[in-house]
Image (cartoon, rainbow, N blue to C red; front, side, top):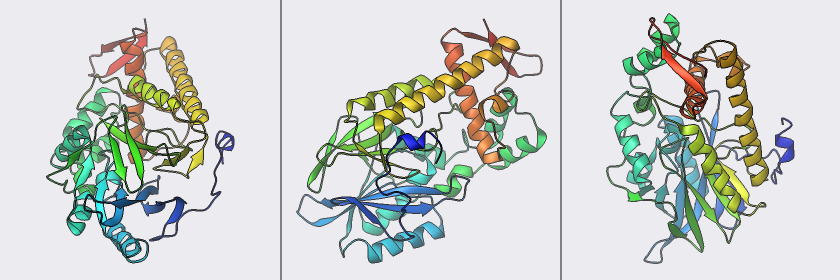
Length: 352
């Protein structure tokens, strides 16, 4: 653990679910984990004991994993051993990123059930699974180049990822049931309130059960790493960082002893402390950007060593570039920085 993690409480210590198995965290709440082919090598998924309108007992799935054979096989193990012989009654997805929505089409078809998701993220997932904008290809490469990532090898790799999203999300269910902030879902014996968050995804939905004292936070609050908050080529002048910080600040309304179930890392208590840590983290990064831009004009690419003090592979670099642009845009749109387009086609920021 790093020193910030030591300020949080991990009720299950270092325990994690074995592949294809679950750990019960609260009555009717089970934790499972699927692998990912990235440096961030896992996603946490959740089973909630459920009951449909006809009174049939079963389970709700929250988040799905990416589309690949290994994830399907892991789900089949869960179905065989962890459902107590009961069916899946619905599939809930917190947001449109591939590790969350990737297998939604397969799960909903396999069980003949509906996908529950925000309308914004359903539309974003549908669009991204049929296009390359924002996730790879020529447009993404040109956007990264305009912010200083002009290395030919990196440019070639980004252009080559023209079907990047679709490889992990080849299909999105054609029908869905809409989740809105403030909606209360009756899942089994408990009410779960939908809490919308912005900045990480278009309309991320977290789920809070007051009776259980549990928050399924998705990617909005993670215990070990900071949530990715990025600008992509779809919305070049986007300002997601203030949206994200306001979204997590609103979660302070929940009790401080809430059990947080994050999509990455381990379940923990210490929600208010973690929110404070994340705000402090971004305050520090914004201060770093201000300092660098006061010394000389900066591109998003030139700020990568300032913001990320470790080696980055291409997958990490594209996320890091999005984060760098997000911090620059936040200061630019707040009037602290000016930006200019050079003769070389690269955007640079400097203190006003």
